[in-house]
Amino acid sequence: MIVVRVELHSAITRKVTEIARMRIRNAGGTEDLGDYSAETLRGLSREQLDRGICQRGGSVANYPRLRIHVWHLVARALIAMNYAGAGEKEQQGDLFPQGEGQ
Image (cartoon, rainbow, N blue to C red; front, side, top):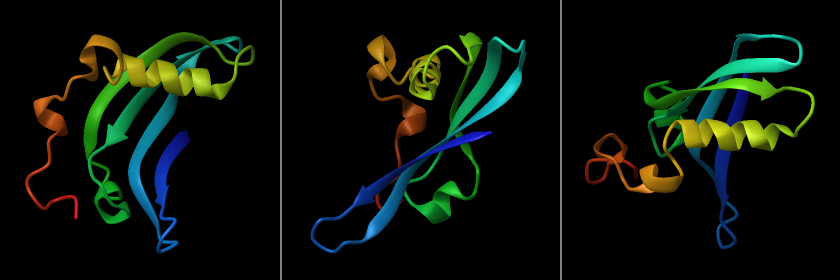
């Protein structure tokens, strides 16, 4: 499994805060072409993200495992979950109740 963590490093306080997390799991394929399932987790803090509640999910098929960098897999997973392009608009499931992220 690949885990992508997004951390905010404060230049003022030097505090490091995890603000997002994505998991990408191998779902099969061949040695050359992989299939993956991906999910982003709900939350704005490590404690919330550790609950493991899925925010969005998607899949990537026929990814050339060894031919291109893993960042392309991350990008394709984000696109599959509508975090880019026309789906970039906020979606109801992405909204946090007032004060939840603090």
